[in-house]
Image (cartoon, rainbow, N blue to C red; front, side, top):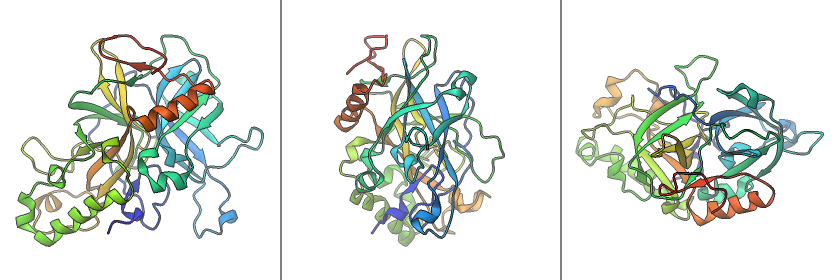
Length: 333
């Protein structure tokens, strides 16, 4: 059976008992001008408080701008696991560390709305957080409203992730991928042709894939990506989320040339062993942890997400939404 250790969060903490996989950030991704994405840094609580055997002073995630009055970000709730508290305000210790818009670096957190990690661990569809900062920005601020329509089949994923092949400083990368629903069968992510080449290896990962239902109450609340090329072959060089990409947006291109956000990166499923019968393991020199075969985003059009957004709005969050037919941004569901 799948344990939580098999579900890899992508923000920089240990994933229960396994290390989070690293890979090239949104591998093969490209810079997207004016993308409404920032990198967040979370300072952690003192490790001695929990008598842990390891210490990670901070972690990094990505986030998407969904409002400007005040500046409002969406990210993954698991990014706030073990986050410290600011001594003066009592708020989570988080700051904007990377952005194409330098005026955002001075923003201070005003409040945060997110479920505790125990709730997220029990049901991954709750892996959403709203962060509101003290900046009031102009209407020219690049942002991505939440899309209320069905998105196109091809979307853009973005994030400040990094991995073994990357060097500092981290940079934003984006890549285009085909979108699937979270309830897709395993053969959408690894075709049955691979089963005949190594049946035991295939069965192992099909079991892992199917067992994630123990951590997700509704697969319909997820978006998904695979790593198959146009002819259905697994390709390690295709863009996929990686370490540091949690909370990064899954973007749909609007008719007016702007973007709307349909989900945020939450977790991936990776191979933890290789098969000599599967050629792609031999054809790539990438480390094994780079071999992600499924990535998941939390849908933003679900009732669970809307409930969180409404709670945040009651505190003053600016979460814009859009429908294709409107061709303009609105402020409420």
